[in-house]
Image 1 (tube, rainbow, N blue to C red):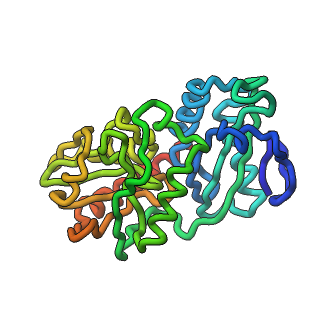
Image 2 (image 1 turned 135 degrees about the vertical axis):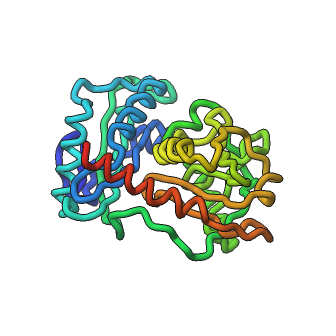
Length: 285
């Protein structure tokens, strides 16, 4: 079951047509959310990011889009899919209503909520091989739009195909200044000595929820210094550790980039703290 504009309908139903602006122009935003036992990880952060993104795209925010109302509908979708007592992945998509060409006829929006199962209620470390390469066919524009979670993800799609065709688990994206921005499906961190570095938003990376949480956690570690700064491809092979973050996986250590192998010491230290923060978020949801 999916929620379309507040009504539950059977998954697979034909409820969107060729006039949908998300389909025609990518005129849409989405949030991917982890839930466990019917409670929502980092819900306030997801909600505030969505509201800020809608304002930036000049979408009209409906009066009913309160944090409490949307949370109630998300929980209803979980119950309808029998996922209220298990870990789940929820996607909330908001798109401008049909009409117009590039210039919309209206700024009013519609939305879809959908849910599917996840394997674990906790963030876990993937200890298998995880090799990455730079994706250099196309580049991220370092501007505000790149920091939003929009439906314009063709760069990520083409990069994912490149990774699959060449046997990589992921690729790192560059901006047009040839700086490392993020991975195909998450934010990027580099560890060198006692320094943990992540690209700043101005370089074009997504304003990730778990990125922010990891930055807060690292900032509290006495043994490490957190720096937001541009990362050159030359910095990668000099690093001690590389890792990715996103809401669903949590933290993914990179084991290999070209001929360099990497450890996961700080990832192991951060993972337990991230799970604790997530549980606290659940308890106070």
